[in-house]
Amino acid sequence: MINIAILGYGTVGSGVYEVIGTNADSIKRKAGKQIVVKKILDLRDFDDHPQKELFTKNYDEILSDNEIEIVVETIGGLEPAYRFTKSALLAGKSVVTSNKELVAAHGTELLGIAREQNVNYLFEASVGGGIPIIRPLNGCLAANEITEIFGILNGTTNYILTKMIKDGISFETALAQAQEKGYAERNPAADVEGHDACRKICILASLAFGKAVDSSVIHTEGITNITLDDVKAAEALGYVIKLIGYTKSEEDKVICRVSPMLVPNDNPLSGVEDVFNAIMVRGNQVGDVMFYGRGAGKLPTASAVVADVIDIVKGSDNKNFIWESSDKDYIDDYKKAEIAMFVRASGTDEASVKALFGDKTVVLNKTELCFITPADTEENLVKKLSMLDGEVITTIRVMQD
Ligand code: HSE
Image (tube, rainbow, N blue to C red):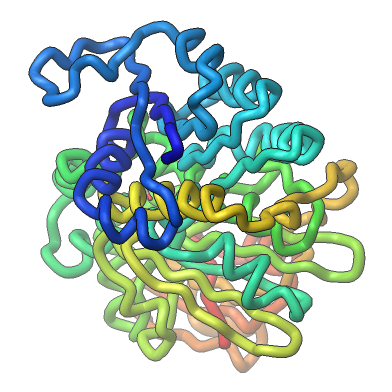
């Protein structure tokens, strides 16, 4: 029997309790031991809970309990999650988390402490909710050098964009629905402004390329400026708008960014709807591999947390889940990456656009001029756009093959 504690009985924490109860027999068979929730930390009262005696408001009761070997941190945010995680690792307990904010901000240090203490710090649920991605990156794909990772990493924004595209409902209504379904962060600004997706692509980049990618310096745009007019223009042209996290390793540097992108209808990412996430990993031997599933929600995310717990109980060796710290020069300027740009502009004409961007520019709509530039570095495209007559209404990056 292995005793665990759950820190934070919110959406994911209560899901962990539920998954362990519902699938107790099959979990015992796979882990080789019964997993028992011995304590739950939460500041709120749960007097109606069938096991209300498990609840405590005092973290020291968990920290000092030598029978608790694994701590599940589902509090979210930086504090007190950071303090609790660090002290648990230092006390020789393994920690499993879904907290991408903490992993992105302090993963280098916490993984280092776990390694020194010969315990685990696992975070499968921090990226892609229920989708296996962290372990496949370090396991099944380990023989590859990963060159690029990109995809839809936030369920809330994908849900909102899908509802805007399919049902024509407003941004606000769709966000309220995502909150009701338990997809959104406590502060949904982290979802809609792209910070949640940024933390996730930084965790993947750190793990895949072996050096920390600091989310606080990554160029991040959310979906708050995307209008129904943008969505309709994209649709008319054979594209859908998705929030895409992107990273690429080149020589000793990494490019990373989060932004809305036009995804062509024939690209598999275009069909990823609602709360689903999809992550494309490009390896130098395997080519492209796509991971797809529910990227948020109570039970999908909790199932990934519990899988990490099972892995620890089984005694799997997870010491390769680690990355080194990096210096500032490691992150390259995203504007040096080649990209095509979708532009909506007024007060200009096709001849002016072609004079600046060349004859290969596709001019898609001449009433309100919409065009897709040929691929060039983003800094060149921005310079050229500043020379265009008239007003640029929107620019959105375009995903290419
Ligand atoms: N708020 C996150 C999302 C939850 O919508 O994807 C899962 O990380």
